[in-house]
Image (cartoon, rainbow, N blue to C red; front, top):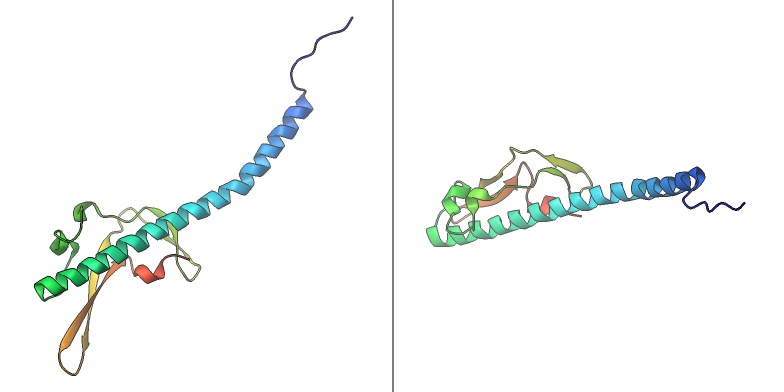
Length: 135
């Protein structure tokens, strides 16, 4: 008498599960790398935007801003502007972990020239500028 066996054998299920596990093992590192690249791109874009807003502020006010609060008129949602949390990639190949309490800051360096003292302000995420992030 013939039996109609429908379904999969244990061996077939093990082979399929092994293939899925191998594919997942190859995909997970790529996904983490892509996510780190996306975070880096966002931080780089945010810092570039803040740097542009600093230049506009200096042109309008004639002085350097002291914090992001000074530039609310130049940045949309300056109160909510926070870097993404997690790993991001730096141009030198290192991976930087951005903590939840990290915020964008403005730091100024005074450079004296022969005619007048100029204040150069830059936006920072931790200790890095926009040029430090990316590939």
